[in-house]
Length: 428
Image 1 (cartoon, rainbow, N blue to C red):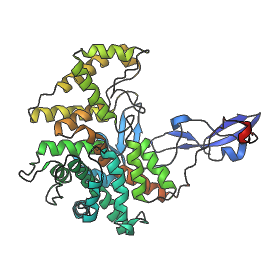
Image 2: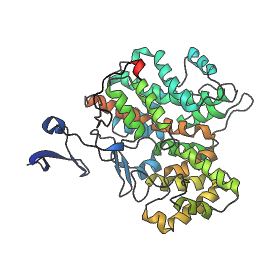
Image 3: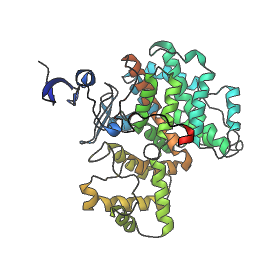
Image 4: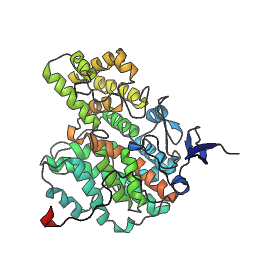
């Protein structure tokens, strides 16, 4: 017999099914609650609400666990490229050699943009935020590929659409960066790796081809791998909500870009760098800002510390921290911001205030420094996040359709006026 939970309302008992996931997560099924009782639940921010069944990513925040399709992030980060990781997230299994070859070939095939699409970049002002351009251009790409607007979630058409989005998102990002700086665009080079091709489109110049360092290629791969998916976060939930209306894949991921844009989500790594820059310019010791962060009357916050889900440590931050040191050492870079960051990290890890509240460095704390070392400009940080998260968005959109989920439609508790009579203009 399946486990039940009993809810007592107005003296009457209601049995609710208890659902247990593959990792022994438990939830109470309230799908019929309103019909049976007339009651709804209240959960602002949906911190205790399960919105779907998913087999893509598992997160245990209490234990610091992150797995893609069952594979620990530590193993994926060490052994897989971003292209392999994207395939895993999208299709559920690590690719065989032949599958990886075909998948990589599709990515190379779909990297270029339609010539007419390229002209649209010049219509944006040079001050346009790259995230706004990315969202707009992803929707615009669909206008040049209308045959995939009603794409199914399996078969060659879906495979083609997946490759098209994964490949063109980096081309759009690179073109936006080049046009904003008044530089000529660099077309994709099919002879380069996924990350190498992006770096070429970003940084090559007519008089000098960008030489892709293996160290930088590996670091960018790792950044993208660590951001490929993260369960039902704000942007992924947005993709699912938009997709639940049966909106096409392009519109759904464009909405995900907009959700990711916020400083509490994808913009957090840029906020970390801005904070470190402010600390550096002030000339004050890191301890001054730690004291400010602990003062409940001071609005100052240490960006890049703590996490909504992880309660002990963020496994991605441990991986990324080592990579930051490796990159700086290999490139012989000395970064004052890293020194400030390490001072903050050590101080907070030894401070009872931060320890008691589990305010540890998260993935954003180190990812901004890594992107800075690679040479990515600050206004492109969140765009980089979006490139990495694209496999997860697509996989969740696919899963939503495969499960034939209903359109998302949260309820509310109305707190406004009760019925009122209309007041004529002369009497107002």
